[in-house]
Structures are given as C-alpha cells and as structure tokens.
Length: 160
Image 1 (cartoon, helix red, strand yellow):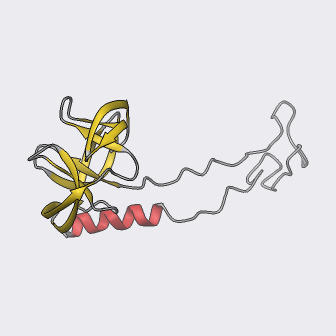
Image 2 (cartoon, rainbow, N blue to C red; image 1 turned 180 degrees about the vertical axis):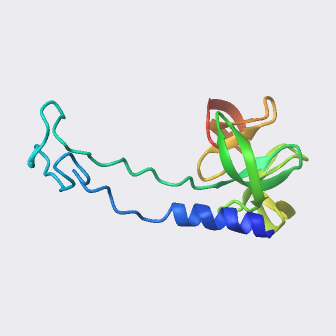
C-alpha cells in the first residue's frame, strides 16, 4: 500500500471513531459559560435560547464487496448507489462466497477466491442480501424471483 493510500485510510479510520456528542450550550451566549437547555444563563436580548444543541451522529460508510462487470472481479465499493458502484477499492470476496459467474450469467458458490476472482466454482446460490447483478442493464437490483442462481424477476435498484 502506498504511503498516500495508508494516510487516507488512517485519516478515515481516525475520523470514523466514536466521538462524544457536542455539549448542549457549550460556548453559548452567557459570557463563555455553558448554558442549560431551556435558556439558563445570562443572554443579550433577542439572542435566542443560547442552546447550541448537538450534531447528529453521522456514521462512516461501510464498504461492500461489489461485482465489477468490466473486469469480472469483486472489489470493495467505497461509494455507490442506484444499483452501481462509483468508486472501487481493493479486490475482495463476498462474505457468503456467492459470486456472479459471467460465463453462464449465474450466481455460484466459490471455494477459491483469488484477488476478487473465483478460481473454483461450486453449486448455484443467491446472495444473502438478495441484491443481484443484472447483465441486461449492468446494474444491481433486488431479485424478486431467484432459481438456480439466476434471477427471473428483478425489482428495485439496490446498493451493490
């Protein structure tokens, strides 16, 4: 891993750690003294309650392992939506080892995964989350009818 990539990963890991919520009223209008919710503390007229509030806890994205049709390889998806991954990371293997085989357009168990590609195919399967790649449009959809590793009725787009 390059030093720049390591720094980026470390920055994300540090930024995504648990952070305490902002103190309510910290730095409020009471002469630098924290105020209590409900407006305690001295405040100039018309300055509001003095409550700063708390920011919502925004969790960090959890990368998924997504199929990349252009390379027939699975990569970690760092950003995506609307049935597609927009930013791929390192090669990966789906947690349930159920992978898309472009050769016969089915999902199969894989017993040997090397650098995001299956080297030993097994029996037909369906991804645990039900989100399957559609070769017709190149996007991922929820499969509403799966049989033998193929989807016969695709539903709404889903995150790969």
